[in-house]
Length: 152
Ligand SMILES: [Zn+2]
Image (cartoon, rainbow, N blue to C red; front, side):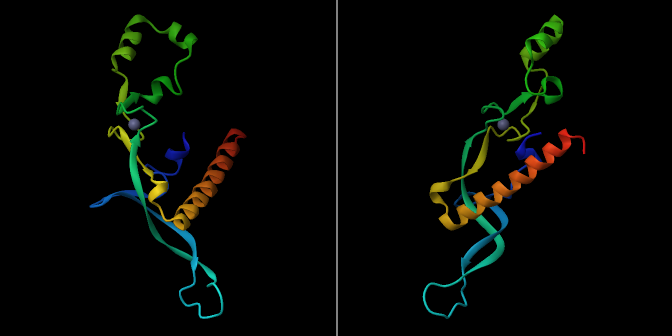
């Protein structure tokens, strides 16, 4: 299982098409200047929990390398080792090579491309908050994987 599949089919947040392009809407907390700040100097920052939209661009899917399909993971898991390959009979090898074991890509669902947050077009404050959010989610994922390995 990859980090992406752990955190949902669309990663963290939901990709959505808009007239101006694809965006990722994410529910998260961002530190923003307090709109009610009336004191002296720069406004205090407050945590604002909301749905934020980050502009995205489409990049070639790294799971299938833009093919839209990949071999069913139940067949080859994380790739075939040469010893596994040697155990297969010719028919199985033919099937594999001809793509008979292929399934629609788990990551891009056959679209060949996946939306990726376009850092250049993002508000730096929102981008930073998103990166922190991804990082903390990734820590949670790494922890869960470690616990699983230990059989918890
Ligand atoms: Zn793909």
